[in-house]
Image 1 (cartoon, helix red, strand yellow):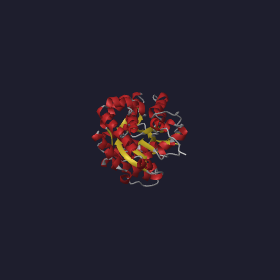
Image 2 (cartoon, helix red, strand yellow; image 1 turned 135 degrees about the vertical axis):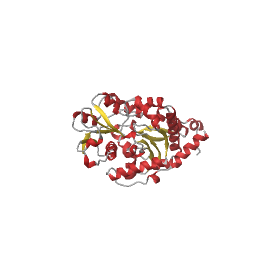
Image 3 (spheres, helix red, strand yellow; image 1 turned 90 degrees about the vertical axis):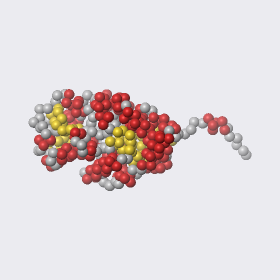
Length: 361
């Protein structure tokens, strides 16, 4: 018996879109802007795909994958220590691109302190963040430790010359699900924007003598209280390696997804490249977007910082060298167990295809 098929139903059926799950750190990466401008959705729609934000699901279920990349269809853009940890110890990923937009950091003391130079910290207490969550890499501690050791070395001091005091944090992820990263970070800003950082509170209380801060605008906010002052700004040195703690930022994707869905990955890169170019050309407008999508609470400080960075994803020799330095630090200090060859990790063909298609377009 022959069964008649209504071809009009097939013709009018809604196509099934392939899904890419994504997560973006609240830092200066082009993906944040590409998403807010709608370019990621547009580029993915062109290849029959849709992006779904990782934390649009229940927070306690979704947030760990931001660090451990526990998904076979996840793309992640942001700080490099979770990406390195995932690649080294957990699952195969592809490194698609790098961007360098990380301040080198500042050493901050109390205004009433008798400490005026980093050399004066010998024998003093340096606060260092410690997360109480054991199921993820402690990226904030790794970044702080890297910066502290770099600052000490610049002034002829070693770790043993200071007392490292752990600043413990429950590191809760209590935000309710949101459709985009801006929805997550708006929840944190509503409750924490005017507060001192955890480390600054310890410094203010006198339980430590100095902190290292690598954010954008925090030093301005702290200095404005009249209770704190900066004694060292690592950005004033020409040594580019001082800026590699948790940077260069890494754009990575699950290997199995990338190999099966090359067009989707290239589409994301097209959007990110377009956004990076737009940010470079319009830093003031980009600052407004980054204020919504990052942890940085000072919009004007973001605008001042952006002209110093190139937000177009790349796999330059310098950025790859910086990534190797960061990887070596993480391994030497026990944050990762296994080694990673960053050059083998990187696959420039996706970026090259995206750039080529943009030139043709």
